[in-house]
Image (cartoon, rainbow, N blue to C red):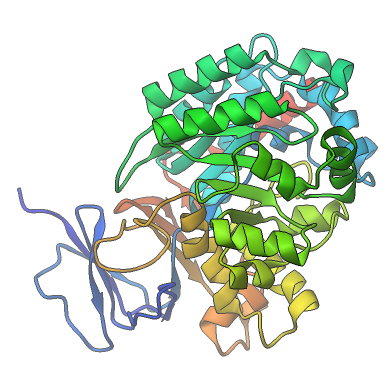
Length: 451
């Protein structure tokens, strides 16, 4: 049987994330990009399907590098609306500790569906809550990822430093080191896919300096090196965290990261706000990546990530929406817009362009996850595509289609292709009863808060 060839024909605009031209569109075959076409160019061989993209801006499938899917159940919760990170966490921990597998499945469905509709094809989740009854949280998430046909880097998070020992989390949310490591090894062996086109991958992700011990940080780094998987944690998000590290470890955050064996190219960090110039240079020299989460950083008043300084030093930069209790959305194209605007406040309009922000959300994010098969449009790459239409009132009068996607606030993809298969058509997720999901999720959110 001949392979299906699909021509995404003559788009309104294309962002390839690599300076290549594709004005004539692109050809998809066997789940990969087979051709990029110049203006007026025809495919090299006949195509069995042609999609007329004259009304669409085509982007690589966007990549979300930091999230907490379960937090979709605690969006805009009044007691934490005006709190900064540490009291925000202390108030929410007891609520999250009641999470059930059924609630987690619904929360994950909502987060992934929302991401998918925002142009996101690959998502990294940082799940660190494993109270009694939720020991198989990552297994639950794997099932949802497969059901929605997306790609995911599911990080086996952990908390091992509870309140009784000077940490922030309540004791019912922490686990012993041997339990954490055994489950980490099981998940990697059972689910981690390698090579081009991988759909599910596993990384190790002790939560933060104030919720895990140095021992589990070191052991996780050793296991990640042994099994060749990536490492993820929160770092340098707030000045409170910096003070915690100085008081407990006698070190600033990057010194602490180095002391536990995490300063290297296997690691990507969430937030990365409070670094001094010497620390930025060290992170860049080590190739340690940073997931910039602008909406969450603004919501919690944490600060502004020094993206261009980190990038100039050699640290890869990607984007994350962060948890849906501090964003409070799971919309990656809007996160790219927020990154554009927040970073212009720091660096100026001339240095932070729409192309730069879209590059962080695509190719930059792929680098954080250690992938070179996604995040850009080029021959041989996975056919992960996000297509946006500019036909709503907000776009009327816009002239540069690519800039308009961010500047005019595009928030929903018209079409999404992942691995050559359409997963969103006409703004709807294929095979998903969205109304039922919303109803079930709302009920679960009320139940979780009520206890």
